[in-house]
Length: 242
Image: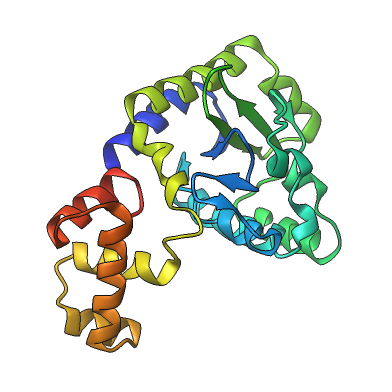
C-alpha cells in the first residue's frame, strides 16, 4: 500500500496547490456488484469501504470524515452513483450537493485545512468495469479551482493517474468484490492479526471473545479464499483491505 500511495502522490504532484482524494467504484453502479444487489439503505455505508488514496494524511482523515457526514443522508448519494450512468471529467457531485446540517459541518471541517472550494472529477475508459473518482480541493475560490482543473494538463494528469494506478495495481479495483461482505469489525480483526496480535490480544482490544475473533478470522479466510492466517493477511494487503 505504501508503494501505491507513493506513486499516487508522485503522479498528482503536478496538480499544484490542491489536496486530492482518489478511489474507484464499479462502473455498473453501487446498486449491484459481484455480490449481487445491495439494499438501498446499505449503499451509503458501502461507499465508505472503498480504499482511498490521498495527497497527504491530514486530508485522508478529513475526507473520511466528510464522506461520513455527507452520506448520513442517503439522498446525497447521486443517481449516477447508483445506476452507473457516470459523468466524465469535471463534475459537481455529493460534496457540492449536500445542504442543511451536512453542509454546515462540511464547511466547518474544511476550514480546519483552509479548504475553500472543491470539485469532483471522474475518469474511466470505455471497456473498464470501474471508474476513478477524484475529489480535488483548494484554498482558492471555486471559480479559480474550476478553471485550473479544466486545463488540459491537469485533466490529462488525472486521467493518466487513474489509468496508471489501475493497470499497475489491480488490487485497487479488486476490493469492490468484498463490499458489503467484509465489515469493519472483520477488517479490524484482520488488521490486528497482521500486526502479530494473538487471538486473546485481539479480543481484548476489540471487546470480543476468542471464539468471536476466530469467527471473524474464519469468515475473512473464507471470503478471501485464504488457506491459512498468513495467506489471509497477504490477500488482505493485496486487496487494500488493510
